[in-house]
Length: 103
Image (cartoon, rainbow, N blue to C red):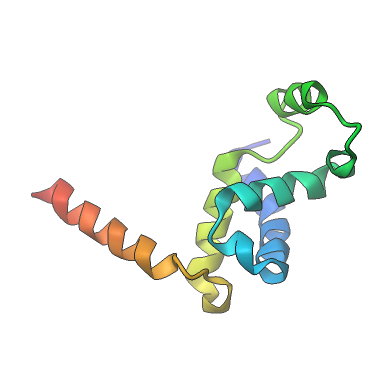
């Protein structure tokens, strides 16, 4: 599956989580955990092993970190009500970094 196809598949999941979980808007680690738990309900079960998760993750069974964070950025860019408290700070830091790189 291409990267674009993966983005299109994961974007509705990310949007739903951002809508339901305000904390996930500023915390990519929390967002990732919620996406993966949505993809595999066994992850909510304490008996599911880290070894099993690792094997499945490395085989591509879960959304990639890049797909989830890219989807979050795209959604937050176009949907202000799903932006977290740190959105403006991230935008400011990005602009400052761009200026520094160009100097």
